[in-house]
Image 1 (cartoon, helix red, strand yellow):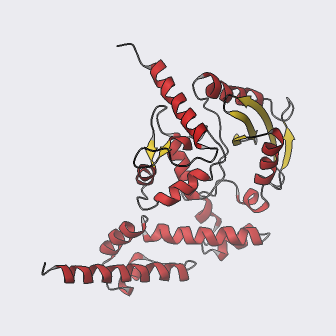
Image 2 (tube, rainbow, N blue to C red):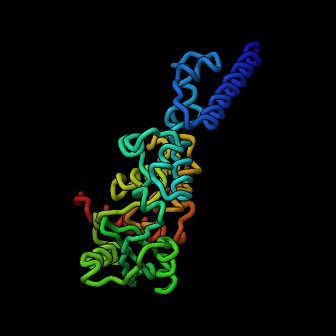
Image 3 (cartoon, one colour):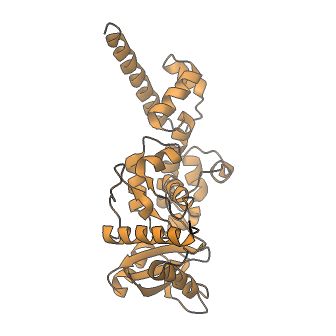
Length: 296
């Protein structure tokens, strides 16, 4: 068609300009950048740049800069003893720029992130379920770990590996009076088909990972979603692979229901604790719905 070559040229030109903007943001993440400034740099209108950038990258130019800054902040925080130094090195300008913006969340406090849980006491318990051994661990904020494993020793080792600097203790009435009830409630759900318990969670991950996990927590008990639907649901339609990665890194199994995420063709896809368990959990969800449905 006669218009195809000009259209392709225009598309390539637009892509080149968007990449130029992205690279500029990466190189100047600590600086104060405005949409007007970025648009002038590539000779586009601010509104057009805003639409095209979000369509190409799944986030606005501002959100892209914030993500780069947050990466710098985390790296500096882990390498430094000063939270304030990390904040200013990343270009946030003040503590309120990190803590005061909704949705900008490390998934844990800066000090806890920096020290890998140092100073925290994490209690754990292990039980037998019909899907194998299950370990649960919790901080004073809520459940931070729920995983299947082959043995008590392997699960306890996994908890220590996940929270290297924390004090890990077995559950007792002094350290964790609620943990025994929590793990029993989860086992009743897994092994006997009771409703999934609504327990407090201490989620630890990147901003993106927590967005994915929070989306999954909103799914109805009998619902599933594809990786693409989750990506669309958090307004990042191009981040399908990143959604799969976030599911794979979920450390709070079943309670954060990553088993509900399927491939676009309806097949199971992967699961951190094995596809047999994934299928069993999905059957469990389906049976709960059938039990709850009124007789026709």
